[in-house]
Length: 216
Image 1 (cartoon, rainbow, N blue to C red):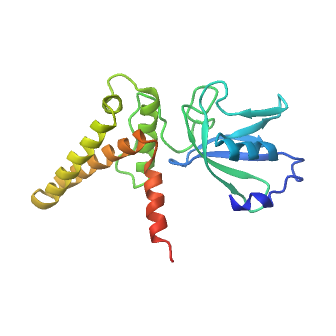
Image 2: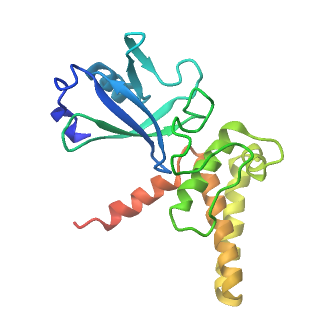
Image 3: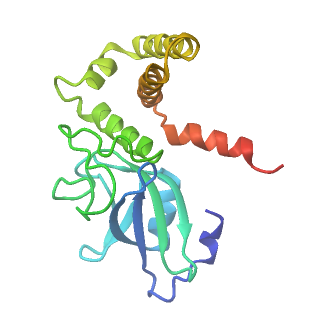
């Protein structure tokens, strides 16, 4: 957020566009407008807040629906007249009860009934899986194994991570590649659930890895 002080508020007569992006899946969620006060409230409260041009007042996303956007970071574009807000949504962002105000934007369509798309696409799928698990944590749809894990509590989730860790280690020693990959997938899934149960995400763990590998 170090570049915020360079923002050109005069260009938009005190208003700047604010593009909101899911911090985990990188899906574009919505576009709003901010005043300097709205940005300051966002930074202070941790809930993304805009200036409503129709109501002529500040409004915090989720103040009525409860679908808040938890602030992760704010970035400034090259002209210092637009901000990119990285956030973690609590529920659907769009007032039409969609994940995004841009229904065709790339990313997971995290409706309770939908399973993750493109299971073998690339590592970025982990972000989509994390977003789906976060959605399960909020909605708790009946019949979902993830819901059952969350309902069983963090001790049971931690136990499952331990079990899957042992099974992965054993597969690495005495089983074939397919078994190792299967156990690794189970471990990643249960680890993601454990992190979410603690209010964390895979992105938080990746950030730790990135910090460790930055040049000193």
